[in-house]
Image (cartoon, one colour):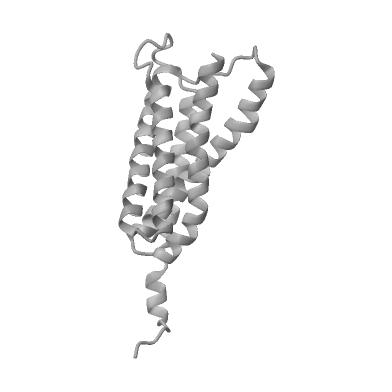
Length: 189
């Protein structure tokens, strides 16, 4: 007969090491500070925007693909299809990583794209109702994604499940709103 009780040593081994969590948070904070510097302070290399002008559209496509992978992965986990869920989440992670590379390259080359002042109502909606929550949630989401992945890869599935309930909707919002950010900038430019 097996017992459901676990020893203090087993519970301690099952806990996520705080050093890992703090390392992930520190890396995420450094990445966010770097991106803020890149977007708001770094002078663009290609001011004319002639090199790799497709990067903003590529970022939108990668965000859309991430959203698709997330929704498919969510559907798989609801059906208890663990392997397919894992594959979908890895797909979302890979395209999000590719997005980040293309995003950094785009901002190194072209700098930040500003919404035109000629459309004050659309600009207000874009800046305050779309872009601000998108940026804040993207900053919050990065460490959540990394910790959620760590919990899964280290076999801490109950903790993974608890955090994933928050990570999934935020990551999905950031991905979808990234597509809308691109669409609004493209439409109003």
